[in-house]
Every structure is written in structure tokens, then in C-alpha cells.
Amino acid sequence: MKLKYILPAFIAMFAALVSCSDEDEVKLLDDVRVSSSYVALSQLGGENTITVNAVGDWSIDAESVPEWLTISPMNGSKGETSVKFSAAEAIDGRTAEIKLNCGKSTQLINVIQGLAVIGDATCAEVIAGPESKTYRVTGVVTAIANTTYGNFYLNDGTGEIYIYGTKDSSGNYNWAKFGIEVGDEVTVQGPKTVYGSVVELVDATFIKVNKSLIKVEAAHVVGDEESTVLPLEGGKFQVDLTCKGQGVSVEIPEDLKSWVSIESIKNNSKSATVIFNIAKNEGGDREGKLVFTTTDGKKNYTAETSFSQKGSIIAATVADILAAEVGSTIYRVTGMVLTVDSKYGNNIDICDWSGKIYSYKTGNCTDVVKVGDIITMTGKRGEYKGPQIVEGVVEEVLASTITKTLAEFVALDDNDGNTYCVKAVVKQVKNDKYGNMVLESEDGTVTAETYGCYGVWGNTGADAQYFVKGRVAAGDIITIVGGKSSHNGTVQMKNAYCVAIEKAAE
Image 1 (cartoon, one colour):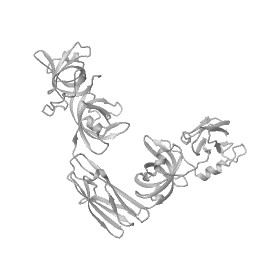
Image 2: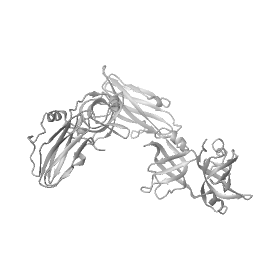
Image 3: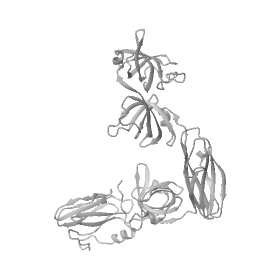
Image 4: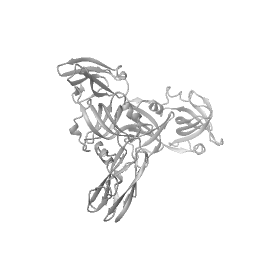
């Protein structure tokens, strides 16, 4: 992401009053001179030209040029060169500081388009507003992501935005000086951009901080002061707070109320301790966030803390994972590997009869898993440009398959010990309880049968015998995995495992 450097408003106002003629006073450098170190452009769009006089080759630092500005040419040689600056119409005033390098010298050129008018805005107004416009926003810090550059999330009750970089009035990253903590009310201003789906203010200028009257000093499992992770069996979770307001109220989010309750709240003069009961976990891993509020009689202040609880690993189909919410629940799925990326070897696509899904950076995968393998893996439901499995781990490679056409499969020797993957058209469902089907090649010249077809690899019990019923019909294209056999002269795949169904067009 390109970060845009925003000049202070008073510099922009001053620069707007400066003429852009050859008579401008500029800083004289040994290697390069420019006819003007300030370039003003109309807010309606337009262009302006300056002259660069250099003793040798020169170039403009592309990283210093924002997306909205076009400069031509970007480099030149000894002598005088006319350089044109142009920009389309701007919805708001904007500025940039361009770096022109020649030899050991760097000439700074300030570009101003219009006059930036910065007004107060809510997070909702920022989210709905145009990009590149500069906003001033006040909200509560909900999470801090980086303390080197000052990246944090800001929520004012109307929505939440991401502050990507926080600078002081001199344009320096100075996070320690700001003293910002989660729960503080902070005012910043900066230009909006959108990165993926995240609305950001980039390199925002710090304005002020209103320290929260409530702060989480410690949070831990009762009996284990080093952990915020509760066991599957449940337990007690303690939160110690500093509170300079009028008491403490606790908010348990609606989705936590079925398994989180308050056991006690103990208020002291400037502190409080809250103990929660966490119920036994009957499902997968889960996590929660607890919000604490106090008031000075005029304004409310909040603080929050998070915890998690171990859970069982949930057996699931691909469709189950696709339908699940993004979270910390761990799923176990069995399927066939469709693709393995050639660069890293740990990004894979897997499928079962219910669908397919992408698994990102799958552990225990590189040089172990290949296309066509039947694997069992665990992972969490993630999302990036679509659903995916994250933090996945391959537990076991159950089988390696060999892809064959139906004609090639029919010609094989029986019981040769190999596992084959065959794609064919369902000609007839002979027994939908056990999954006995007649298959034929797409050209209709070759047929074979399945004797049992299941949706769970290696599971031939009662729970798996009803796989075909209601899911597979004549005309569907089915992909199955199994060994070659025959019975009374009829070619069969016994105890076939279904990995894909393409429904016939209705």
C-alpha cells in the first residue's frame, strides 16, 4: 500500500498564496534547481509546468508521487527540462511532497490542489464518503495492531475504521508520545483509503486523547494467572480493573449469554474485580469479548478484554465449513486433493461430495500431499476473497488415487491393490439405500456398477449407507474413488467413496 504524506494545513494555505512564476524564491542546491518549489493545481483539475535545471541525470522518486498526481517526465538529464504536473478534478483539497533526486541532492516540490477543508466526521460518514478526502474523527480505541507506526481500530458508535499509521504534527511516527491505550477516546485526522474491504485513514495526524476512566489491568483464568484460555470443562474468568468513574457495569454480548454469566462484581474506591462463570463447551473452540463501562456523570467510558475456550474438534463436510461463520472453531474434514500450488506446496483445494474449499498454508502438507490424495485435515473457517480453511493441518493421508476414465477402469485387473478415481454419468440408481448404481461413459459406450457408495471414506456402517438417497439421480455426473472388482461378469467399484456430484441440468 502506498502511504500518502499529508502536509499540515497551514503549509497548504501558505503555499496556495505563492505565485508559480519563474520569480519564486527557491532553495538553491548544488546539483539541481527548479523554477518553483511549489506547484498549485486547480481543484477542478488541470496542469502546471516548472523548469528543472540539473548538472546531471535526475529522477523523481516514484514512491513520493500519490496516485492522483501525474508527472511527466519522471526523469531527465543535464540541462533544462520542462516538467508537467497534472491531476483530475478533486472532491477535496489535497497536497503532496515530491522528491526530485540529482546526484547527492534532493529537491522537495510541494504540490497543492485546491485547499483542504477538514471537518469533523463520524465513522459512518467516513465509511460512506469518498476516498482521498481528509477527515477528522473522534472515537474509542477498540484494538491496537501496531505500536511502531501507530495502527489501531477506532469506533464511535456509528461504525469502525482502521487508522493505518499515526503521526505527530511534525509528520513523525511517535506512538509512545501519544500515550494511547485501548478504551481511550482519540481524535485524529487523515485521508481515507480502502484496502480490500477495510476503510482506513492513512498516516493520520494525532490531535488529542481523552484518557478513559476505566482500564483492564489484568485478566486471567482463576487458578492460572498466566492464561486467558479456559479448558473445555469451563471454569471462572477474573478481570481486574482500574476505575475512576462512578462504578462499573458489565456488558455480555448476546451471543455469549448462553455460556457466560457474572458470578460477582466487587467495587473498591478506584478499582473493581469482576468474576465470570464460563460453561462447559460442547462444541468447537470459541472466544468472547467482554465490555466494561463507567461514567463521570456526563460521558461513558469503556474498556474491554477477550478470552477463549478450548473445544472439541467438530467432524464436518466441506459444505458444513462453507456454511459456518469465520471463527476459532476447529473442524475435521476428509476429502480429495484437487490442486496443490507449485510455488509453496501448502496451499491446496480439497473436495468431498458436498463441495470444494481452499486451504491456505496447510501444515504438514509440503512434499507429503499430492493431487488425488484422500486426506483428513483439521482447520478453522477463514475468509479472504471467499471462504477458506486457515491454520489447517493434515492429520493423515488415507489413500493416493490414480485417475482413470471409465473405459480405462473397466479394462483393469480386479483387486490389483490400487485406488482409482473415476468420473462417469449415472445411468441408473438401482438401490438408493446402499448406493448401487449403473455408470456409463459420457459417450455411452462403456458401463460399470457401484456396489455401495458412501460419503465418508472407509465408513461402510449404517450412518454412511444412506448417502445416495436424495442426493444422486440418473443423469448426474459423479466422481468416485475405489478399487476395481467384478461380480458375475459385471465390473464394479465396491464400497465407492463419492468426492463430487454435478447435478444434471433440469
